[in-house]
Image (cartoon, rainbow, N blue to C red; front, top):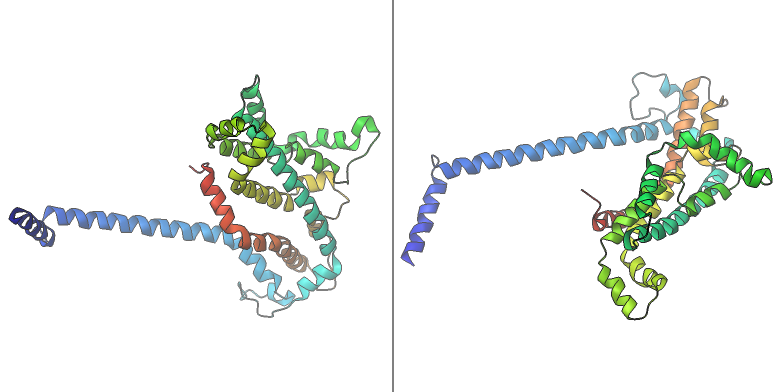
Length: 319
């Protein structure tokens, strides 16, 4: 007992002694930890500024008047606050109709991508069959090949569908086919995500369900899907958000369809009058339209950010 008390007093003397080696090491480690935290804080603030700067510019210019664009003293805060730019978007463009069509198209693509990527990912993760490696390579190729390289064949295929008997361009059928088969935008990424999730689920659960008399499809519905619902939500959000802001398929397959990306492209090339003259006025309206277009995604993220982060953390694909 006395030896323990003596050791404690000796340790206290070493720590409180300014010239002790232990205290110098503690001070050095504390300084290193503080420097690392400061560096990470500065890095995070810098990255946040780079990400938020374009959004802040659009938010500020949305409420600027034409005179503010010619005033060099005006920065981010408008001197003459106005709602004329937003009024023009609702009055002079097909914003509401384009938002409605984009909503339905994005929901259809998101649901189709979730269904197809979940089935394909489950098959690649839990079943061994001849050619599984080749299928996985093709999935990666779908992800790596730029969509611009297949733009012309894709357009002609849907323009002259079934030998030219049907024309599917300017309809939602091309996106329905590509989403349900996962050959659409970033379909390979969805498959790889779901494959990683199902590979992390123990095979004993499927074997136990089989012993209880459950079929393969029943095991998938009753066991696998409930365990992967967090990542299904992530895939749903990814597919919905990327389709909402997509410009490739919108300009290729929906040239005369009222979608938010196509209306924004038309607005960028149009000559806007009625609010002033010059390109500054057009820029203000374009920024206002872009801000209103992404606003539903921001509202959606506010409500689902907790589930989104939980799905990423529980998937095991980080790091």
